Amino acid sequence: MEIPLVRTISRILETREATGTSSLTQANSSSSASTILSKDDFLVLLLAQLKNQDPLNSLSVEEFTSQLVQFSTLDTVLQQSESINSLLDKALRIEALNLLGKRVKVGDKVGIVSKITFENGSPKIWIEGESYDISLVSEVLTDG
Image (cartoon, rainbow, N blue to C red; front, side, top):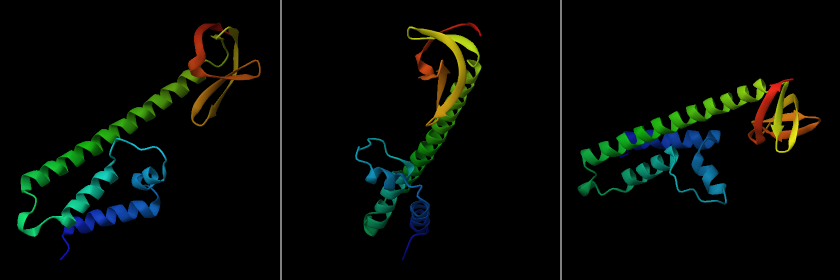
């Protein structure tokens, strides 16, 4: 007899694997090991625990509730982290666009920012035909 929660978790994991959103699939294919468990990792561990628990010595309600609360907390923290990263990305893009037409100092070079491009999501400023990472701007001198 399959427990409804086990069936639900199994369906969630199967759906994520089918759509390619599982971090386990990505983590297993990655050569570097991660020390942080993802939501999917937690679900896999919870599912394995539920499937393999001894029926005569099952997990207490308190322990199970505690694990579900931990999962919920993890999910909330991950969502907040994604939101913060998105906000930081947008702020960096706005900062780059605000430099357009301004005279800036990048290392020893001083020039007017002629255009902005985005390479791999990271803004690059262009001065006299050369691109620079926005983090290299040390000073904004004047409007062009």
